[in-house]
Length: 453
Image (tube, rainbow, N blue to C red; front, side, top):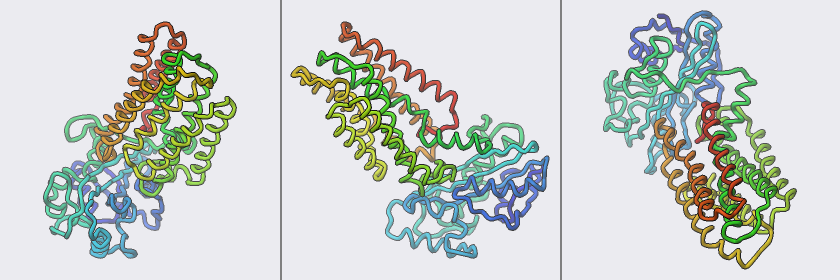
């Protein structure tokens, strides 16, 4: 089967031919095409679209790949081939990389490959391959090309340039991506016999724009937010013997969601230059539009709070929440993420009722216990999630653990309803918690393309 490949790089053609021996690889240099996208996906699509115009009705492919070094904020990234400037100079690239890593202890890195395909019908598909590892102190080996002499893959004590072609292709970023290409273009199976997964279908502008905003707001995870304040609100009628305002509780949920959305957008703005696979660095959403969305989310939270007369204690509690969110987004200290969710629960405690009573002192102990449990759970999940971007299976487990907070919320509400069966407010709160779980399951089923990390 013919596969037209947008490249003139002979090293790349040789590797592709070795990994896809059953295909007739036809190189086609997309001469004059400017690779000016901010990410690998965009550049691969630019190239494959250029040759697909000439080979309608055929399978066409282009790949864009590069080295991403953690300590350098993901650099050289899409600029890997010309890291040291024009023209492409491999020795100069490697020398500059070593110079920039002088004295750096954390030398973690990964190779990334994005393969973009256009099938005979014109549909566009994208697959990815990653190979995590680290940068050596000095070059070693004569095989391969580019940064291969400096890159040592995880689980090996040799650089890519010291491995044989077969050894490298079995674990490399390009080898992993091309296995998926083979499954799509060929018989539908990968090396281990399983079906190919993680295929992105490139959609039209309207659909992709909506998807980009859904990704930015991580709507799949939104049902995990209201349960925090519902548990906090439930402590008032149960332990303090005070009434529960349904309208204020609903407003509390709305304000909590808007504050959460503020934090998510702020996170992506802060990581706009380093986070991979997100809408802002991918060029799907402009930084200006994201900043406007961040402002509107904060304004909406304040508007809801003012409109429904949130009590005085809610405002300093929410301010602490915003400060913790901003600090987490800029430090990535997992403990702070736990603090954020604990403060969200605390907002529910202080906002459920405007009346202060001496009996409210009874809330201190149960509220403190609940906040500590929330903090510990989210802290542990956030700490465990480090490195999930390089491990799809770990990312799946992290997604399940994040969703697990809804079960924690439901358990707390159920325990309170059993402890205080006479409290009429518990039934609607328990129902609301169950609705959040149903929505979480529904979102995960209907929106599989929306990242929830």
